[in-house]
Each structure stands twice: as structure tokens, then as C-alpha cells.
Image (cartoon, rainbow, N blue to C red; front, side, top):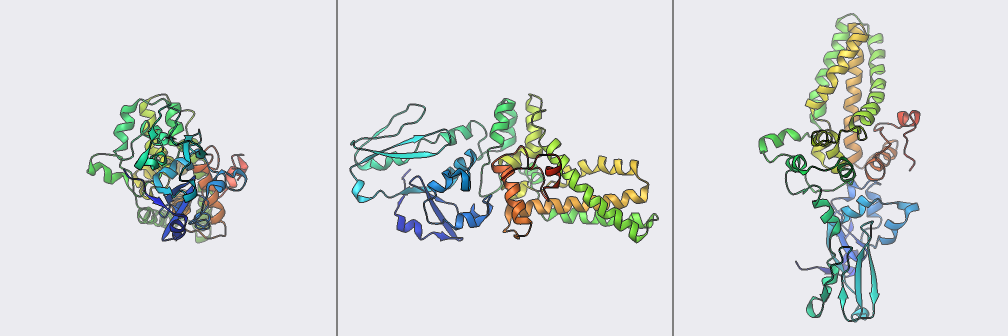
Length: 375
């Protein structure tokens, strides 16, 4: 496969939201589709569009990037930077360190060598002198030892026999695709794995209205029903935290078995593996119902029926706002007030440290339970 070369002037032409290219270690990446999904906001990428971001990505104080960030770069590689005319007689070797960060160094020899930690060596001469710019893609090799994103994922995971440690390491290294990944080979099963964001309010708002109506019909006044409704919304913020921390991230307590890994993957692992998959972001109604039934049963056990209806209506609205906020933080240019901070905070949970930062709509319970991420 031919390697496309571009001059700095050509790269500089692509510095807008409609076409955004960047340079990293003399390689060219088209990050147009990823800009809006960038954890720190698209302004960080667009502010350096058409430029060399090598030093910025390495600066841990101003803009720390995880190993996953460097691996994701591979998905957007489109070519290499044209070598200056004065360096036509020099040779460059490419080495890959543990952070998947390519470092270029010039030598005064007539042979180009590509070295990897697998000790394979290739000599290049004549018309293929740019072959050194095709790195041995060890990061891609690492990924294919986990899951092949071009194939249905569930059957691969079921048959892989990964250790729990390897699975948890890999599933928390984010990958990025331009469209949704495939879980099942069967198109009939596959359709049930995808949930557009608008299905959440369509499904749950009638249930919320019914619960509030029943609270009024069974004896509560407007003031009392409204107070309990608001109490239910506040209660959801605690439920949101507890579910995210102790159910979705039940990592350490997972049994060492394929069944538990598959369950973890379907419940929440796929969202960490592919955090920008728009159709696997909000909770499918079937799963939400499975979680809501015992919560509803508990409410009706602890409270008299009218109050239980009122509390559940508020709690379910809190859930809907949570799922809409979650989608909004991942895929929108958010309002600067509150949401900008929460977008940075939540995406740090995905791209920097998934052990902590369990709040989506607010940090309040992270502060109370000492799991707040320090950005």
C-alpha cells in the first residue's frame, strides 16, 4: 500500500472543522470526525489544526494524553510529512516505545532501518526509500490479539478465553470507529443492541406521567406530590452514582470466567471500549426496565402507595435526564456553564482514569465518597 506524502503547506490548508488535519511525529492524521468527540472539547484540536501537535501531546502538565490516545491516532493516519529537500541523503529509523509514540531520529547512513521490539529489520533502498515511514504497527497487533473491530464482537469474546486482567486492561483502552461496531453476526439480533438517544424519552416519559398521575389519583395533593417528585430526582443522583460505581464497574469482583466477562462487556464494557459509539451509549429500555423493577418494588415496600408513585416518577425523570446528559456530554458542543466542566470530568473517566469520576450529572457524590477525579 502506497504511503501518501504531504507538505506542511498542504497540511496547513486543513485547519477547519470541516477538514482538520494534524501532524504527530512526522505523520499526518485526519481527525475531522473525532474533533467533536475529543475529551477536552473540539476547540483543543481545532486550535491546533494544520499544525504539529507532537510536543503538545507529550506535555503532561498542560495536556496529558493516555496510552489509549496514542493508539487511537493510528485510526486516523492518512500519510506522512514530506521530508525537506536538504535531508534527502539522510536516513531515519523509527522506533516504537511503550507509549506507542513514534520517535524519529536521523543518521548519516545510506540505509533506512525500521526497528521494533520484535527485532525484525528491513532494509530499504532505491525507489522505496519512503518505506521506513510505514511503521510496524504493534499497537494494531495488540488490538487484534483482543478483538477485531471489523468482525462481530460477542462471538470473539465468548471464544477468546481471555484472563480477567487482560480483558480489563484492554476494554478500558478506548477505540474509535466512524460508525457503530457490530456485536452479533445476525442482523435480527444486532438491531436490538442499538438504542438511539431519543428512544429514552419516548419510552420513559409516559411511564413518568403515569406514576405522577397515580400519586395524585390515590390521594396526594399537588404540593406533597411535587415535593416527593423532586425528592425522587435527588434520590436518582445517588442511584446514578451507586449503579455506575458498584454495578457497571464491578471489575475487581468479577469471577475469572468467560460468562462474567461477556456480561461485563455487554453491560458497560463496550461503552468504555467504544465510548463514542452513538448507538451503544444510552441504556437500552430492556436493561433499564430490569433495573427499575426492583427499585420500584423497594419504593412500594418502604412507602405507602401514593408516595411511592410520586417518588418513582421523580426518580425516573432523573434517570432520563441522566441518560440525556450522558449522551450530550459525549457528542455535543456543550454549554460552558456546568456542562463544560462535566464533559471534561466525565471524559477523563474514559480516557485517563476509570477508577473514579462516577458522577455524570454532578460531582456531588464523588466528593462525598472521595472518588472525585483531580484534573
